[in-house]
Image 1 (spheres, rainbow, N blue to C red):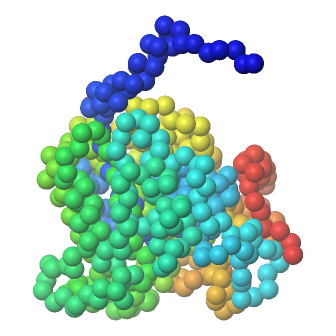
Image 2 (cartoon, rainbow, N blue to C red; image 1 turned 180 degrees about the horizontal axis):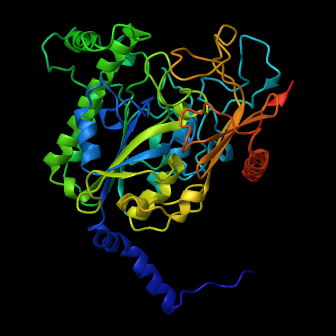
Image 3 (cartoon, helix red, strand yellow; image 1 turned 30 degrees about the vertical axis):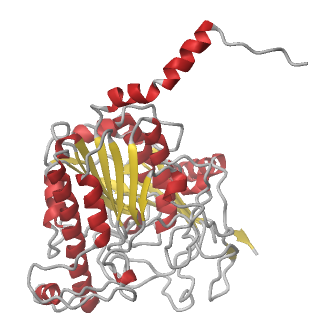
Length: 484
């Protein structure tokens, strides 16, 4: 028979402490900052006025940058939505997660409209529930957690981007989770938007309203709120005729894809307006001084709508245009305004950083806390660590046969992306192409546009970085494209 169990005096004491934990948690978290995370979709590194764009008006985002820190070498974990978002949420690389592409409706293999020498790994549909997210980590620190907008790390349910009932935000630690397309064109079939001609007027956006309602509520504990926008993802359309007219007069007549760029500029200014509304709600709550605001994009810009120059490439590939993104952080009285930092950071750093801000111990993951990097231009030892990317897929799936092979600067076309990986260490970045085992090496300090391949001039460095990339992917149990 099993031995009888009993509780020692010490055990009873422990149980009493556990029972009182919520009360202690309230006291301990009362001085911890709220965290508001605004995630853009497909926003290019060079899209914003504060990053040097010559004609896009983005006053609210420019003000956010002026009030805090603007990072010039922030990276997305992947050049595509789902993989990047899964990595951001978990602090792990897409390679380790085996979530390197976009989610689909059904499992299976990628289908390409042209024979290819390699086959991509099987499609991943859902972020596994066993993975701990930022929300789950911050729940443990006594935070209330809320999610609004685009999820895109689970298979589509009932409609495109519809949240899975088994793998949605509430199953991944978010206590409040409200699904809403807002005024994005995704919703126009269900809720048509009338043309707007009055200058300065925008269509109301219900998703933005939901975020504002949450921020203005009274909270009895610190919160982590994630406002995951559908902007500026395609379809790029605006009901604001006045914005279209404004940019028609501003975009140079010789611009490539001029019609698209006019529409995109109007679309982007609409998104900037949404950010302004969210920040106004935060101000109205009286909690702005106690709230860290993080702004970030999930990957680079769409090549048919925006210029990624001076960066090469775009969304879907691992050149800088696909993965270098805007990032700003505002923390009143903690981060000095108009700070600029050039330390390389990446999306899987966000989980450990936010846990660090919350006063917790970051879990084991691929990211590093960059909390100390937020306070000035001083470099840390992390500046010499390696960042990696892994994209063992082809793109576009439909149209690959007709897409051009070359990838340049501001091609304004969707080029062929083939299975590839990349590593950055210090100033150097190496890309490896799986089909022919070829590498390219660039010095980003002197060649931000990745125009001069140094792999033949510095073969030892190329070989060293290639081996480090291979070893890292092996340790992370990465999946690879394989021969048929």
